[in-house]
Length: 205
Image (cartoon, rainbow, N blue to C red; front, top):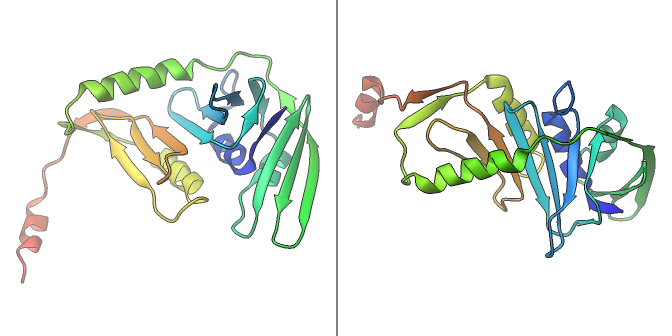
């Protein structure tokens, strides 16, 4: 049985690919400290990683998110939503101030192994920790991926934290670090110099 914040499934579903093995959202135990990891990726161009410290999971599953499941899990500002997955069924409960509403749906599990996203993240972390705090390169990013990342994170807060190292990936996250979106660059570029006009504007009195 798996139990976690439904919003994390809805957000991760935004970053899946069209073809196997990138079609699924992976939900897995976070280890001895409990908690649940949620992950998805679109063939390496963009990745979504989320963590629910209060979540519970006794197995790792890959589910192919249907439109009905995504709609049921979509976050709303006036209530909390929780999803429980048992076998091939999902129960999404919406907790409002005065009433609760439960909706049961069938889910489709992917029989294909999830991409080795942890290794890719490990390589990124090794790269980040080996670099100084400042970088000499910037990245050129696809607007569509940036829009999807910002839209997904906006469900939690009106502001997000953004950072990039050595040409990418660009890291977008919430203040509590429980949801992180990584957007891979189309190409690495030198950090652009400030244009003369903005320097002049800064001197304006």
